[in-house]
Image 1: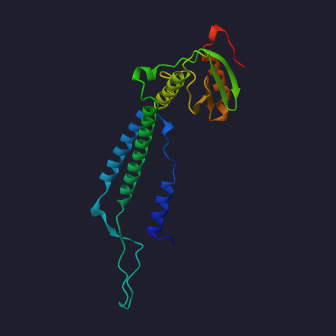
Image 2: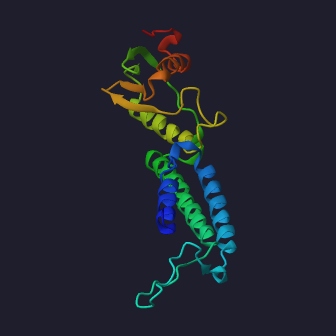
Length: 221
């Protein structure tokens, strides 16, 4: 027979084993909205708890017949489950808050030198000398006169801006999609790599569509 305390412990363990909230599940604003909803649900569940509903458990062992050994009657409150549910909602709210903060910190770190209007602007992928395929992505090589450091910084900032908004198509560039890594590659290059192998072709196609080539010609390889 499973004792009530064991049943509650197992139930709580199963509940805590659910999927965790991840920053990229939604935008920072949506994470905060979800946190607000979870806190409201926690308040509703906490209000359903009745401390006066305690009663003797029907599973409590009887007192010994010779009265030399006494088993105290076990008591339980059938509304305690609402408190556990409230705790789960509060924990879920904290996860959403942490996810929103992670997205906002990432944007602030990548965009500390860019004002809001510049963050939202799609950075120019050019002038480009050539684009070559590499493992899981492409290497974009710019012309010698290009300020590659500025282009690179703007690309990372705009990616962080788009990520904190769940890559809303209304604020992002065609190139900026989830799971992209942007890296410097020497003095004139920037590597764009898809972390998800299924999106490599999409990344390569978008990169070439967005690129502005020096002299107006295409030099993609």
